[in-house]
Length: 455
Image (cartoon, rainbow, N blue to C red; front, side, top):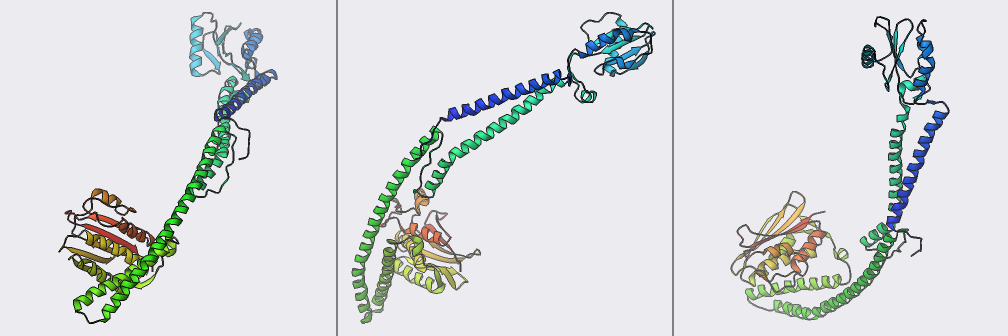
């Protein structure tokens, strides 16, 4: 791995937190400095501006001359009463006007108040309202923002949120960039691609994870190689065994054909025909086993169009042969309109026979095994096998189609747990399903193989 300078995740977080704090301090300083700069340049009036201007104009405002409202600062409001206490003019609000009247009627000097009372020489009374806040020097700005010293607070809040969002997005972007090697390695392992290189990040904790994933990759590579070698040996053994079986099978098939040519009773001829048909089936299975040992399931799936009537007739003959060995009657019911089906005829035959063999094996003597061949509205073909045996246990209903699963209870048989598993795989290749269930009365099992006709 490429060596990079690394830091812990906590240090990375503290780094961005420090940047955030520094930016907040800088922005706060700039806002405060900007306020005082505007105050110093005269853009903003000081808090004592109103009081100072009133004090300077008090002497003129007390003179018995026509009242000049321009002497009152624009930051203040006023009310003028004549010598009889009647209102002459006012710029105050209704509430402030009532307060001014109340204070004037008390005839007491008001201290620490927002009102200034000026007794004019003509007997009239002037009440001026003021505050001790800073104000914009521009009257238009003053009308919009009467208290500019309150502006920095919401401005700082907005800038705080904005800086927090920017820092959070940059921190998130940094984490995503540092996480990308982990995500890439995870995706490669998920896709079973172990031929990838680990890229080091700048975060120590992430590098620890990547180191573990690198070790996992090596371990998986070794494990897969061992598994592949084991699979190769197993396939070689299967191929050898299948090849060895062909010799005695050829002898059985040849002798059966010789006996079929001789003059024997019809009952014996029928039994010999069953043997001959079964040897053909076994021969096909051996060829398929040899092919399976060397290539994948997808490659051995040879789909083609075949005659459905001939296929069902063949299934009927082989099912009757299976049932006759155990003194079990066989019933065939079909409701099929199509003449042809597109699929792997050998594997479909293999799946149906496996289901039938499983049903016959667990069917009591003199009972009945039924095969229903139905065509659905969805373009599917259903092979439903029903027996009158003990049915599946709860564990078997869950695991019956699992590879190498065998049940040691009611339906234990002399097999290796492959029958229903093979049927399930055949169903998946044909985009169908395999369903295993018991009869409602519990006296027997129902296995349904549904295959999609894609012709």
